[in-house]
Amino acid sequence: MPTGLYIHIPFCQRKCPYCDFNTYAGLENLYVQTVQALVCELQRWRAELAPHQIDTIFLGGGTPTVLEVEQLAQLLDGARHYTHLSPNAEITSEVNPGAVDRIKFQNLKTLGVNRLSMGVQSFQPDELHFLGRIHNVADVYQAYEAARQAGFDNINLDFMFGLPNQTPTQWRDTLTKALALAPDHLSLYSLIVEPNTPLHQWVASGQVPDTDDDAAADLYEMAMDILGAAGYIHYEVSNWARTEAHACQHNLIYWRNQEYLGIGPGAHSHMRLAQDKQQLDRADTTLAPFADLRWGNRKYVQGYIQRLQKGESVEEFHEALSPAVAMGETMMLGLRLVDEGVPFAHFQQLHNQDLRAVYQNELAQLQEWGLIIQDDARVRLTHFGLMMGNQVFTRFMPSTD
Image (cartoon, rainbow, N blue to C red):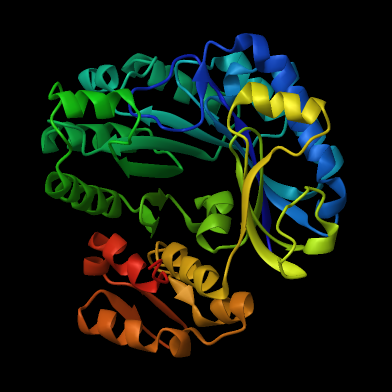
């Protein structure tokens, strides 16, 4: 079963007003120490990861490319040295069109990065300004061309919809310009007003209108129509691929509820580990010998670095997932896969249970409502279910009462 490695680079040139990720601007003085700490954390996991083949690496953030090429090389060399990396591994780096140039792309290619995820967000100048992006439309074209010239043949473009006052005409124009570039992959995300962000404050104070779920749903359906007509495969709720081979292999690990290790400040992990082999100290001694575990690292960069320098655990929280939660998450994540859904054989492999027996009542009700469809191999969402996904997903999660 594939295993993914996520490496979190918590730095940006400027933090966007809608972003609630664990990222920081103005900490250039910590770049060197952070990279050293990331490699140190990788080293700690060497023995535990020995039985695992790492099939994907995802450099996320933040903006990984704010680091110098030598620092990125140090990270990827560490990943190769301390893990069993597949020779055909998908290695993705997020990039910001305003923070890369031809030389940086060439360096990334030389370092073994073979997939890019470019945070474009919009082709509308006023929307880019509202979102606080450091790039303009011209930067997008220049960055995309430079990436192609550097030899990248697997490029994702990220976009956002459902912005306050965004019109269907603007959204259609953005999609049309995106398709004109013929990207290999497109990720489209509805804007969410997250707590503790400047955008949340703007909405709360009345400076900016709140998002409109109905309007966002209309824009989402428009995107499905336009991208479908252009031949793109809608393989996940928010993701389209030019061919099946261009689907993001790293994110498929998440959606299939498989194992991944997160390295860096605030990074999360999900592994099925032997309790007596874990290298991180855990106060809870009641965990099963082989536990389905999820944990997250300390968020603050300075604290993360200091703990590693002192030889201490960087773990901020951990939990052993109950069978009910683990099965519910397999359903919640897997149903995001538009055609694949949740195969009965995959569920059986992960949980040693028959999906149809575990969720007999839920499946019957959701099918009656026209939200899911089953065949001999899988359960998946209908088109109506795709539009009502969150309501479907909650049906599989155990009550917290």
